[in-house]
Length: 378
Image 1 (spheres, helix red, strand yellow):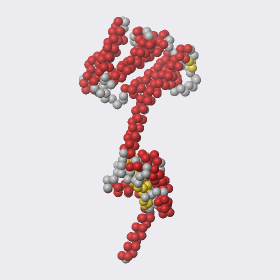
Image 2 (cartoon, rainbow, N blue to C red; image 1 turned 120 degrees about the vertical axis):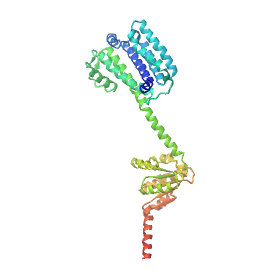
Image 3 (tube, helix red, strand yellow; image 1 turned 60 degrees about the vertical axis):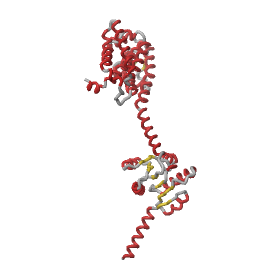
Image 4 (cartoon, rainbow, N blue to C red; image 1 turned 90 degrees about the vertical axis):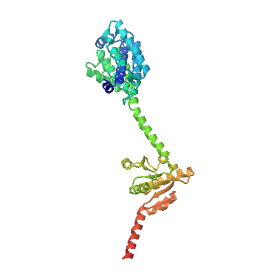
């Protein structure tokens, strides 16, 4: 029995049923306020809702909100909410019996038994992935849809164009989306009042759902990005390598042999993922921008390597880094610039490069030396 209870997650089920009961009470409180007494008798006869609950719309609305918040406490397994639930459910059962409607107390009785039998589970932390706010957000969407569909169908005689359940669903979706095609229109005062109440209910429900469901994920990602930025800015004496290329790959592999801390700045997503797969720290961004170099912790770096394949890009990075270094009145980081065209070497020195390396020139010189050595030996 205990294993089955753990699999079913009794506190979650109880809290959802209590919250659902709250939404039902909200509905039964709103319907009389809109003057649907005739149609309400049919609905309440089917749902077996106590006459006391529909006597006053304000009481039902208040009770519905109270039950929803009480469900939150049960979901969080708060002992105080558990105790209050026992009292509220006992009062509801007594109220049903006194008014001669024992069938309306069945659900309350089942909830009361579940609270007593599984009382120990209401002092433990929740074990579900979704929070109560997210669950209630989903329930609020369901409530808004049920309110719109059920209400428009009940008032179908007062809403031109609504005759079937499918018409009610269509009308609800069009109304909640604020599209308003105009093919279905309310024709009575009650119908206009109902449609006026649908719009704020739908907007609040979907806005709450968006905030509760999407908000935590956005917040989690933002915290992840900020933590990454903070980690980069806390680096010291690290080497910043700008741009992925065959040269930068060689630089990184050689620096790894000395256990040097390296950070690669790469704006191209595919190369950034490739470098992360190889175990390198990667900051996505354009190294010609001051903000990117600042996020990379340029002020605390020991060296900056401009290793793009194009000389113009490397020169722009060197200019930006030199300006930031001069503004901070620091001697570090030293700026190393890769230049392929020999004509650009003086330009790199003028813009602030401490060291200029031309791989093609060095490669050509090494080849020439090997050829000369071979001729001497021959």
